[in-house]
Length: 379
Ligand code: NAD
Ligand code: ZN
Image (cartoon, rainbow, N blue to C red; front, side, top):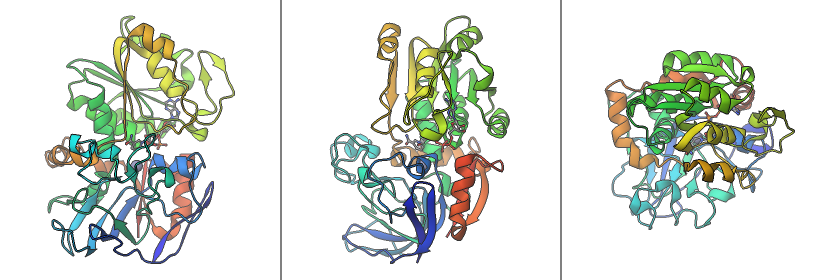
């Protein structure tokens, strides 16, 4: 079959690979119909995630048709069309029982890392992903969810990660009616977080980035007030000015730590040469939120991204909440939001690309070229 093949930083190719098969009675094999590239894949692509092995197939955002099921699978049958959550979760461990499907202990017993994730290095279990014609799906009765008849497949693939992650970002922010919410990052995740902030009752939504076509999209889609951070001398001073000197009620970090995203920027008015994995958006979030406010972090940080300004967190009495999204827990209510037209996920898809052209798709998405917001591969 044709599948993504990681050859080292900035090199992802489509190549022939061996078909996946049932390795465990709880597995299914899914024929992939759509597979997105995510900002999280860019951390892999930029060589920022430890233990990303050459030869790996990336791809944690895919939907498709069940091709084969293991002998213990009860809820799925061959031919079912399914949304496959990016989390690989056993459904039975201490964490899964609490709905923390992003922290499953059985799929990835490594205590300091997330649970299992498709195509996301050996730090999240070493599973191959779905930027391929076929993928093996462990614990097939737990994650995969039937695509409702009425749902467009382009919406379905966005339900595997972007929609739940944006929604969970807003949910973790504990947004109260009338709150001012500042979202750092106008990528697919930040745009979706800003959209969902309204569902929780936000009174005002501000989105910060520097990529103008993304800010323009956010202005209309979310909708949001948008600012280019290069026009802002001091982020905390600016947000204070915008909020009667109080600071934002909620700040959302939808950027994460990454060489390409963060290395160029200015911290506290000082031009700094930042190490890869440093955390500008997180600093801005902590410094811009009001005393007693909440900072919600869905941007992904690797082990080196630990530069949290703890003094400010303590002195301002800030709550920081962060996690991988728990896709399965959120799907039922998000499917309702899409059905009722409160979220239009496929509107974010700007590029529809055959799997053969995966190299170009990574390049365009990484470099923020050609108006790219969300690229989807068609295997
Ligand atoms: P993306 O790369 O498309 O978008 C990130 C955006 O942040 C870009 O538009 C970039 O210009 C902007 N940016 C960079 N530095 C910034 C700064 N200091 N302030 C404001 N904006 C800045 O990525 P995406 O797909 O939107 O994902 C965003 C983040 O969310 C990534 O870190 C990704 O790994 C993470 N993510 C987390 C989860 C989860 O479950 N927690 C799921 C999906 C993605
Ligand atoms: Zn993703």
